[in-house]
Length: 319
Image (cartoon, rainbow, N blue to C red; front, side, top):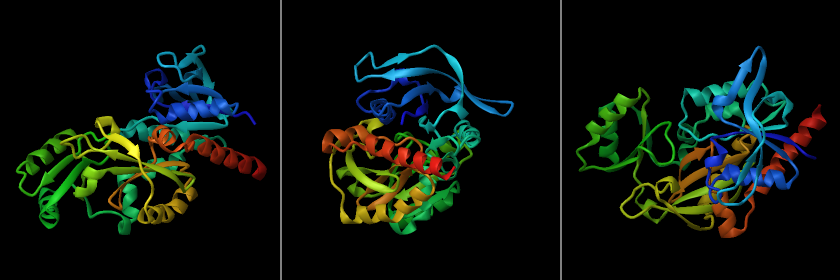
């Protein structure tokens, strides 16, 4: 069955065709006979009860420098689609939150992936708080003295912006580092949001695993090795992906969180695990499926579409 699919994402003409997960998902959609329409978040329009988007029909191909063909610009009524992908990159700011509220207007009649209600209510660095038995010691705060006491308890810490992405603004602060107060002043001058502070896990130098879950089931993982002298392993900041398997502890983590993801309509999720500790649950725009396919031959994009097609079929049967 051919589906009409809308991709809400950053400009598709600028993506890396060998790394971008949405591009791979789009290619798989076309291989299954689905039709694609692409728009950016600023093209989303609510107009007198209708949810619209200004965008273009697209055709994709794995051809460097010529990976997309566009139709004419048009305004489409999103209620006429079968599936909408919520795939723009963070930061998870009020602009991002607003798009989830607007997409709520058509979901679940139109299947939005991932469910916009839960994308809004389970941002990755907060979602992990639901699983304290799986996470390293964690604090969310703005209070300088509390953060200083947390570092005194754990000796070395990682500080991150609560709604950041791609490794931006992540700092490793040993006990002897005298820059803690200045750094918190810097964060405080940029945003009123608290920061997330976690115990530093030295094993990060051996890698930070990105585990891909599809409809609550672990399908595979890649390891991300930090660049020399870096505490951050994100591929956006130079982390090197490598082939890796899953440990028993990691399977336990996936078995614990998987049913929650499935229940909440979070079909495509990437979790970050360092030395057996869950640090993030990425429900906004996870990456890693192209690297997983190259390393292990696992076509996660096909598994994602199978899950979507099952949900669409179940919804149609219920109606």
